[in-house]
Length: 263
Ligand SMILES: Nc1ncnc2c1ncn2[C@@H]1O[C@H](COP(=O)(O)OP(=O)(O)OP(=O)(O)O)[C@@H](O)[C@H]1O
Ligand SMILES: [Mg+2]
Image 1 (cartoon, rainbow, N blue to C red):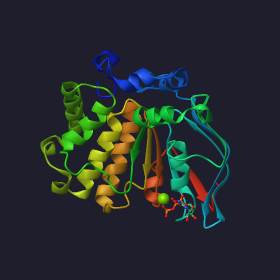
Image 2: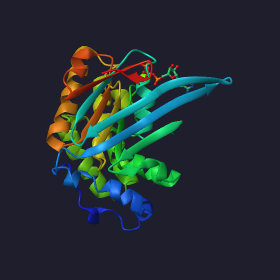
Image 3: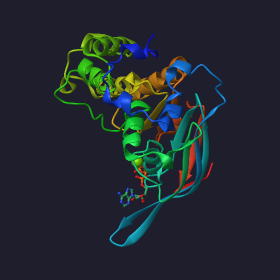
Image 4: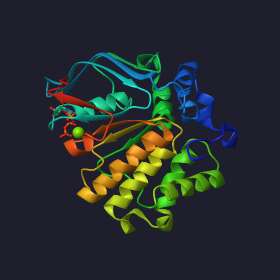
């Protein structure tokens, strides 16, 4: 099955596998293999979260006292005006950046207790990122872009390509497996980026305005794929978008204004 990959298929000498600490093991227990478990479990708990940026000795508050619970299997949309703090929040939840104060708990683990190496491991294995700009590797074909993600996680070349092909089939892009990003449309490139996120064993996908560079038909297609990934593979999805039409297709909408959650 697409969302299951037996660990024994991974290379035994995978560095990343060796680095798994007890902190991370707890988090990794949330892998897709047990995603069918109780959907009411809290996957992310945010408490009194603040983030300020320092710019020329000036402090810019980007997030103010955020409190938030996200349940396993939710499809949450975050909406808000430009500059309201959406990307900042997503980056903190994905452990790309550190908060100024406050706590982010993932699977009952305080992420403050993770070392930098553990955070790298978390980002690699636990979270799938989809960005506004597709961020594909230009010299890698469609299948290689997805397979590369699996190689990073320790799967051997054969398994990585096989699984990447399965993912391409799911995305309806099997025929384009050997095309390079420049030979694909924007919609197709973004679907490859989704495939890369889907390749991970994680159950969390963070998408920051993934439809911003797509026309409305490709945009809706992408949202439909995210919905399918949410229902079929039980991945928890957090989608940042400006478009209310897209946000309304999520299971919950969170509104941010001037760095605060208002609804
Ligand atoms: N690296 C940075 N240094 C200084 N200020 C920053 C930095 N990154 C973001 N900001 C500021 O923090 C606030 C929130 O920015 P953020 O990127 O989270 O907004 P956003 O809601 O994602 O906006 P958009 O919809 O335009 O992407 C803004 O006022 C922004 O100018
Ligand atoms: Mg943003």
